[in-house]
Length: 392
Image (cartoon, rainbow, N blue to C red; front, side, top):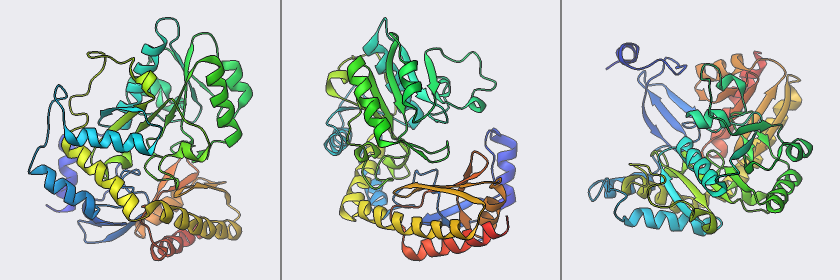
C-alpha cells in the first residue's frame, strides 16, 4: 500500500485522537527510520523514548524470535521463567524491591496509586504530585498529572490528588497534611519541558517522607533504563524511592510496564487486589531482558554519558549563536532546548529535512536520541538544528 492508501485507512477506521504527520514508517534500525516514500529519517526522539537502545536492536530481535517459538503468553495464575528473571534483574539493578508487571507507564502508575492507598488505608489516601508533571492518560493518571490542559473535558476527575510547584520546598511542606500518603514526581519532567529536580530538593523530599511516614514514588517511565546515564535517574540523587514505575525503554520496543516497591510495602498487595491480564508476558519479558543485556554488554551507560556531554556542548554552541535559545537543559541523553519564541517552526523544519525530534509546551524542543547514538549522527542532527533555528 502507498502512503495515501494507509492514511485513508486511518481516516476511515482509526480514532482521530493523535495529531499525526503524513508519514508512514515501514522499517527502522538503530537511529534511522524509513518511510513509504523511501526517505530515511534520523530519529532523535525514538518512539517517545520507547526505542531507547535504538530501533530493532539485534539482541531484542533475537530474544523475541527465540521466545516466539516457545511461549507467547501464560496466565499470571501460573509461573513463568522470563517474568521471574526480569523481576530479579530489575531488583538487582535498583533497590532490591518486588515487581508488579503490566503493559504501559500509565498502568504502572495506576498500580503505584493503588498500592499507596492500600498501604495508607483507610485514613491516608492523598497523593501529592508536581505542576508540569505527566503521568499518563487513564483517569487517575490524568488527575495526577499537573497540567490543566490534560484535565479539560474529563470532569469529575478522581479525587485524592494535589499538584504543587516543582523544586519548591515551601510548597511541599505546606501541602503535606494528615491525609497525605505519598509524594510522586519525575526527577526529570519530560513532557513538562525537561525540568530537572534539584538535588537538595530531592533529599529534602526524601527526609520529609521518612519523617512523616509517607511513600516516595519516582516515575521513571521516561528516565529509566539508562536514559540519564545511570540505570535509573534516582541514582543521581543519593536516595532510594519507596516505589518507582517503569515502561517505555524497558521493552526495547515491546509494550511492558513495571511498578517496583520495597519489600515491606509490596506485601500490602495480596491476591485479588490488583492484576493485569497481559502483564509480564514471556515475550515482553524476554525483550526487556535483552535490553538489560545490551545496556551492560555494549556499555551503553558510558556511551550515554559521553554522547550526552558531546551533544550538550554542541547545543550550547548553538545557544551562543542564537539569542532565541533561552536555556539548554539536560541529563544524560535527555535534552530540552527552551526558546523565547514558539518552537513549532524549528520542529517542522527538522521534520522536513529528515530529523525527528519533539516540541513540547509550545517553546521547547525535546531531544532524546538512542543510547547507542554516535558522534556522526549527532553532528548530522546539529547541522539540521542549526539550519532550523536560523529560519526562526
